[in-house]
Structures are given as C-alpha cells and as structure tokens.
Image (cartoon, rainbow, N blue to C red; front, side, top):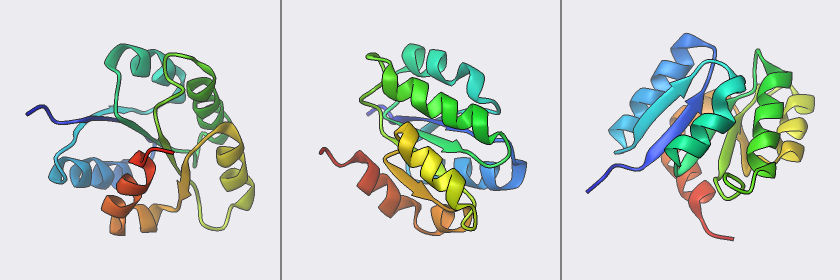
Length: 124
C-alpha cells in the first residue's frame, strides 16, 4: 500500500522536523519546503493528500501560498492545515481567509496531530 503524501512548508527547524517525524510515524510520506514560493507547483506535480503550512516567520508569503492553492483548480480540493502563533490572531484569521481548513498552533499540532489530520481530511 502506498503511503499518502503530505507537503509541509516550514521555516523553523525544530518544530518542522518534529512535525515531519510525527507524520512519518503515522504512516505518511512527507515532502518539505522552506518557502511558500514553490508550494503551488509542487502540489500540482506531486498531488498530495494534505498540505501543512507554518505561517509564522514568512507570514505574507505563506498566506499567499495558501490562497494560491485554494484558487487553482488543480489544487483547490487539497485540505490545508495552517500553523500560526497562538497569540497572533491576525495571522490566524489571514490563514482562514486564504482558505486553510484548520488553523492550529505549534504546540497543539504536535500533541493532537492525528485528530487534526482526521478533521482536515473529512469530506465536506
């Protein structure tokens, strides 16, 4: 059986690596990016089941990458989980407005990853 693919875009090494390891432990193949610029093209090419984007340090570029995914007919169906600082309501709202299905904080995503994955992958 083929492992489902998740694209993960992050800039902060430690939480990003922890997230990748957790996803692999749950049976996902993971491809990473450290910039939002190539996210749309990689999603078109690789056809992931899910995309996880850390909107932290590159806020504007990552939010724009989420919006581009949602606006493209080739990738609009792919659920996006955005990771935003728990105290940054502006980033959280911007990620939702761009089209993230879920917006979670860095600590919660590692602790509750399997529940967030189930929630993001539910058909509407």
